Length: 172
Image (tube, rainbow, N blue to C red):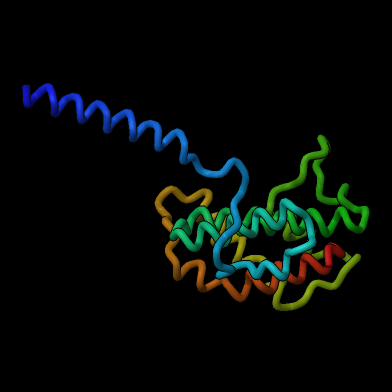
């Protein structure tokens, strides 16, 4: 009798737990980060919705200690902003292959640094390579696990590059 009662209670707990999980799913769309530790939202606000959402994801991954995810999202934001720069000048064809796909980040950076339509700042030039490096390690190195300090070490680089590319792309 006691075993039956315990089994009934455990079964009810399982049902309640399943219902709680089903009713408390994560949001369907990107949520807003609570802090702005990496990307100041004032830099990206009013640019493009997907740039704002990427920025929230970058901040959110940092807040939660998911540093590899943070580094990969930073890499993605840099790629996106570089593409925005070329598109804003009507020269996206310079960074596309023969099938119309955008080229890889290393080639995007080279094209950005050598493009004569703009004059990218000295600090941003140096920063691009540092951001690519941390993003590549987190995305492609199976033994590299990013830590907070890895992201902290490139925070000034992130700020430099994001603001520079946003202005070069005429997003602000």
